[in-house]
Picture 1 (cartoon, rainbow, N blue to C red):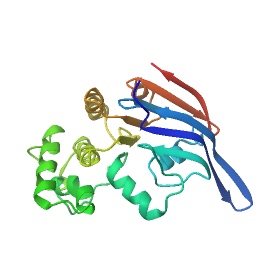
Picture 2 (picture 1 turned 180 degrees about the vertical axis):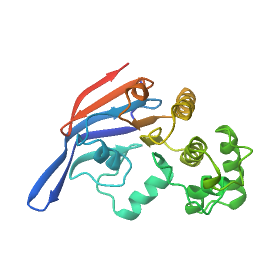
Picture 3 (picture 1 turned 90 degrees about the horizontal axis):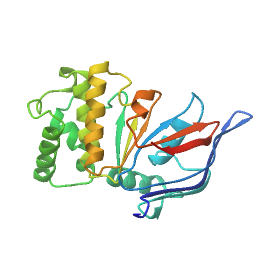
Picture 4 (picture 1 turned 60 degrees about the vertical axis):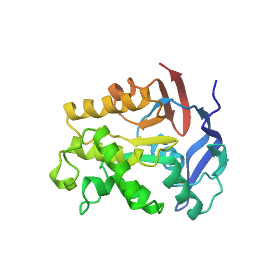
Length: 228
């Protein structure tokens, strides 16, 4: 079996809320391998959002180790974590998080722009990915001129533009009608079949069933981790 691209070792995360200490993650340990397609589920307050923030290098664990691509990112400073997010991770959000003043092409280019890549290189890669997600005829449109499903396709192309180790999706179909939601899930299926590693946080069992592995959280612990 290939080496894991991500390793959590007894990861804990606690927050101080006034006089109350909240244990959001209580010692999470798992490995993620190249090509995994994982859903993360659980009731509200189980730790899903905290886990996603730590996975996405948006927050640091209180204790434990997080290795991404063989590098321990647990204790990195903000600048180093920002560099990791820009080069190794792709994000897809429920609310798309597109910049309304920019075109489809410009939104897709954003991660490469912050890496200082040459403009002709970023523009060509953005065109290729826009075509890949079915938006070749929408390159000059602004987000407000697109449907919800089309906006999520832009977000997926943007997540792919830096060729990330891992794509993290937070309720990616939550704001979509059922038809658009199915189209987005088919796109995720296709990306995984091409070798992309995906982690999707969802409340929707039908979304979870498309994944090949399901991790369920409860009270900050892993309740189950099964391949399906």
